Length: 103
Image 1 (cartoon, rainbow, N blue to C red):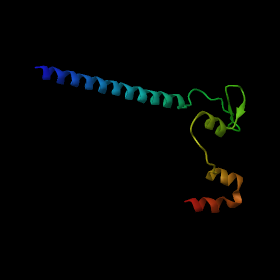
Image 2: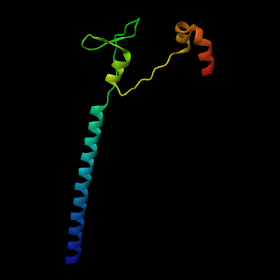
Image 3: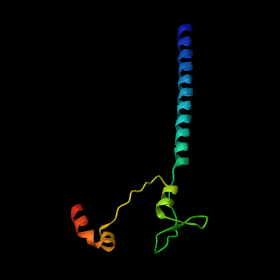
Image 4: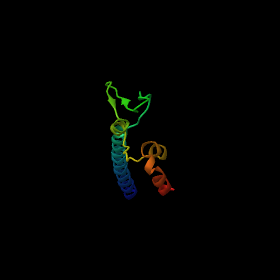
């Protein structure tokens, strides 16, 4: 009977150590999750945007190009190109060649 009690006590100690380890793992996971949430950037709400040049007014009242504003407030990155309509408007002499190349 003494051996049985000893085995139960050892098993209880092992379970307690496992529980402590699980709690530490959970704390570490929660810390990582909180760090990720703190770093998450989300755009929301109304953005005052110029109807002509498409600049955005920031919280301090300054006008910034849309690319700069979005880059500052999100993880988005930009690459630039010219759509077919703007190619036709800005570079009519090249529009047919450029637009037919893309199809």
